[in-house]
Image (cartoon, rainbow, N blue to C red; front, side, top):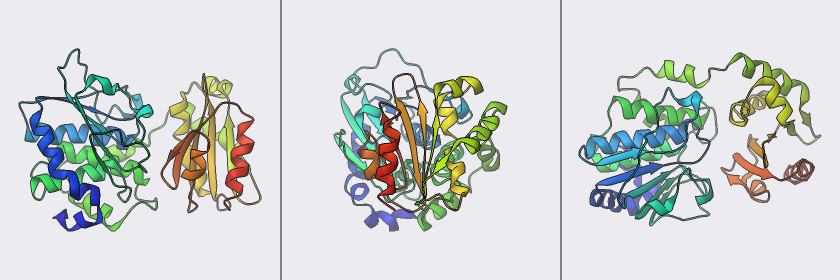
Length: 320
């Protein structure tokens, strides 16, 4: 059904058969993704694992990486001791430094991603920035392999749908295309409780909810519309939150009319992690100036000192 889209995605068109052929050569496969996973990272990783297990039931296929407790409802990571020269498939990870795992444990590497490609670390790279999410890209890949998705089942549909929902902000973000809606519609035909998973994706603890009060009371915004909020470690400790849990609230600022660009700067043990968002101004080039990168309207950066926040604000103000 979705073979009509193949000409829109040149790397997918060029390599989808090659990827399946390489997968066919290996009896052991490790699927990885980025550190600090989000729904798309977990959804695409476990979704692809489920797809491959339906095609190759006798292969050893494992999904590895650290777990994010709030996403355990999607599925859990595998534990494995020894694999002999496995094939590695890395999903949703633009740079090798962000991979939650060690590439040296594998024989060859396949990279499948939708972030701008500044690090082609795979032996085969399928990077399509025009898709909403890596989960959407995995669905298209399976569609090409399975001639109208013979290899999608209820569980893989649940996982890929969750990944798409996560990276499109429930289809509110500008990366949502007509193809995204069509794919989501096809996935909803399978038997899984999409409403339940969407609710679980947005469940927050009392401390996370109370933390929003801090975010409301402590943000600053420039005349041009760059909104920022500083979250020191003492605040994380006060509310009993991890950096990842705190950062889940970054999109609440989207509702402010005057905010054109916004970011949350969270103090961690050895760095300051910045979650950077925009309504319609490209920001990933600015993030790259601060040891980061990502999507045009959703990026991350890393600062070494609080004083750099003003430098980041100045760069972002200059884009408005």
